Image 1: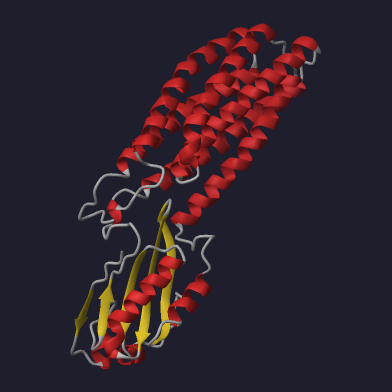
Image 2: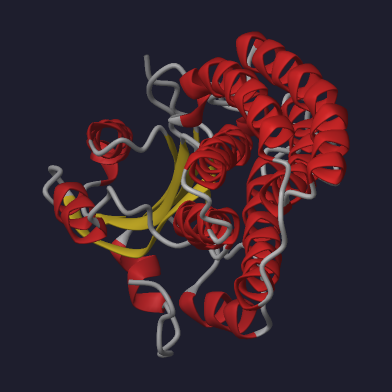
Amino acid sequence: MTDSRASTDTTYDCVTANRQHAAGASRVRVRVHEHSHPHAGAHAHDLAGAPVHGGGDDSAKALRWALVLTAGFLVAEVVGGIVSNSLTLLADAGHMLTDVGALALSLFVTWLARQPATPRRTYGYLRWEILAALLNGATLLAVSAWIIWEAVGRLRDPEPVQTGIMLVVAALGLVVNAIAAKLLHGGAGHSLNMRGAYLHVVSDLLGSVAAVAAALCARFLGWSLADPIASILMSALIVRGSWSLVRESLDILLESTPAHINVVQVRSALEGVLAVESVHDLHVWTLTSGVVVMSAHAVVTMPDQHQQALEAMTAQAAAHGIHHTTIQIEGRALAGCRPAEKSRAI
């Protein structure tokens, strides 16, 4: 379903328009100027009320259960790591402490992102999901660096570990983390916030696998270096996933064009609409996970075709996965009034 609204203002000539543009006017009103907010798909007109992917009641419930499981096991792992003198367990416990904070943050942000917009924050709090994902990714990178540093020290100066206690605690952690990962897996593909929480739990799962493997090697093969080596391998896997999360979060915060959208093809599709002569100042970006936004100026040559062109361009944007669009319709008069300056948009 498409909701298109447009308004037409009149009576400014080119001289006035250019003076306003040079003075930094946020809106230049001229003859045959339509500013519209057409929308397609299931999204509402108000972006702050748009669906928050991966942030519904099911995701909040999954986060709560994962938080309870992780916090409960954290205590057992700290005690087990101290008693057994296992760096792998203590490293994983330190990582699990960050997981408790990360899961709590993700749960809070899931609630916050669903709050209504305010006059000051007209987009609502949707971007908090991306900030939480960035923080979670950066925390994972920092913890991994610390684990690698400690593990290198253990390689130089190996210390004995009590493999019995280490094996029991690691096996229990493997079960707990597997359950938590299963709970969060469903929302990880739709929200960077949920993906950040999921990566934290998966990294703990890998830590538990590493701890079990290290305990078995030390117990049955007498290989004392298994503990720090397992820690380094675990950290390397965590760094790989964390860097991807950080990179994607930064792309969104920098308002980069989403990787799955070809902006050249979008422009071509818009300019292929009947009566559309050209499209300029085209921007496509991601507001939050699953919410892609577009703004553009379109020069329409037939005054009686403005509404039809608007609806057709909205449909073309939706066909490219863009369901919230702001399209400013311009006649040739306004197109010729634009001051000669180097455009920062394509």
